[in-house]
Length: 479
Image 1: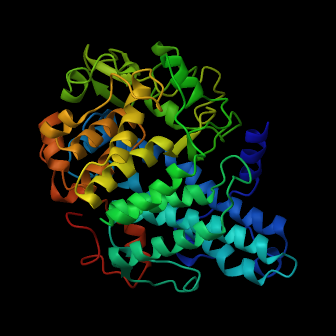
Image 2: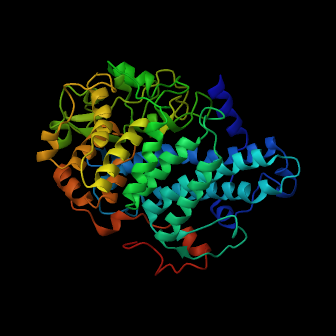
């Protein structure tokens, strides 16, 4: 009920916004002069930030997943797995993501600019909503900068400026960090409602940003703050059903490992579209037809070398839907009572406690130039759970010093990540961040990555409408 109420509330204030509207940042549904005056009005403005993000996140995740070393795209998604950039048939695929992230940023800017001017709202409420808005704005820019590189930095200070040049990636990351530091200071200790960020979510996202830009000591410190808070634990699992229901379940309100998820529900057009993208009707996991557009393969070296005792390896169904007998589909997300293509109730994980543990393991080892007991323990907690052990208790599945004496510790962390976050859209960004995309894609798929594939094309509409951009000079390489 609470989950449906939150999703329904957001649905009521979705803003219908065109590409031109995004650039002009003029609200079509909210009258700024009279709207941001009470807590209820400002909260409605904050809810409007979620709507475009929830719309694009499922397909955005699937797009990233096609580029991982474990997954492949089918049909119109196949070019993503060929690593030659977007072709004429699917170059428009990323336009909705660009528009969605910038719409969210526009809506966040409106709150950040106008909430402090409200006439009937306390400073405590203003600070709370500003923290939430800055968290979501930072999250949106984090997606933009990692996929497009340098982009226009639209803020509450330049909302009326139609033509805006690109800012450097350094400037964008500085802006993201500043937003998250501000969010961390004002967000609550516990979520105001399921699906709303806390200061711990801000710390987790900030740790991920620090890891991305190579500030390993800061990444280790922030992720360790989340660990030491003792607010999160990995969910114990003993079966595939435990994972499907107790970590990703369609009726699950929250769990002990949820740091920040986008919430979905079995309401008309308010469900998670990702299940439609990845499912096939023969599996019985999803009662809608499904597109089975993203898949894996039993001959992929990652799958071949995956220990059969790892419960996560069982989260695949072997389905021959025309691509051969070795085709695998993820069984991680299941909703047998979804009401439509966009009516699955499963929430979408952005940050789980497993993320925090593995960020800490990698960052601490790089910052300290050694493998501390704490870094090893963080890695082993994730691994133990996958082998049905109590994550908090040493087990026979643990990595030991003998393992990282022969295999670099960071490689062990990356191996756990590809297992733990399969079909969560994280792997391609990790491969780019570490500078090892070609190495891993070549090993798993024997493909060569074209330079143009590393950044997505800036939409033509942005280049045509934003006169501060030169279509010849400001488009990303190869497009």
